[in-house]
Image (cartoon, rainbow, N blue to C red; front, side, top):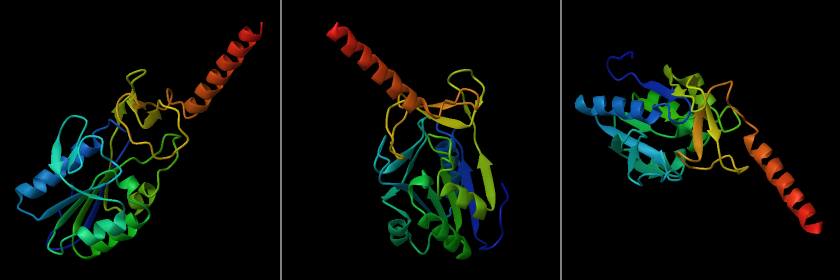
Length: 207
């Protein structure tokens, strides 16, 4: 990591698939800032209540106190002007306004650290993460372990049926997959299998 001198702002983005240690890395950086006696504020989207409403908790059980905000606009109203370091988990859920807010905070001399998914369940760029990567001063791409073959994994595989972009969940609903094992159309394939099975069942009943 490059440390800046004085009050020069800085944007750091930690991105990657689920189960790759993004939140753990975010917490590690924020803890170091606290040890340095800097004023730290931590935020996460209100939609993420998997483990706690007032803490960020990683899959490996690292924890740090946080505040919930529905989007970047609400988050801005909660930021103390004296804050020196702003941390944001699951930044992909904070809306397009997160990009402008991150830039303005950095221009004010604050260090901004964001963690989030860079691709969605179909493997597409998960906005606003691509835009945040473009304005970042530092980027760390984390990789998970493919649950199918053990290779490095860059994708998040959804295991439940839904066409919604945002379906908050953890183990049992998602798993990490490598490029080779990733099945972006798994949901549609499962629906086709279910439809075929139902059709066969109706045929059997008729006979």
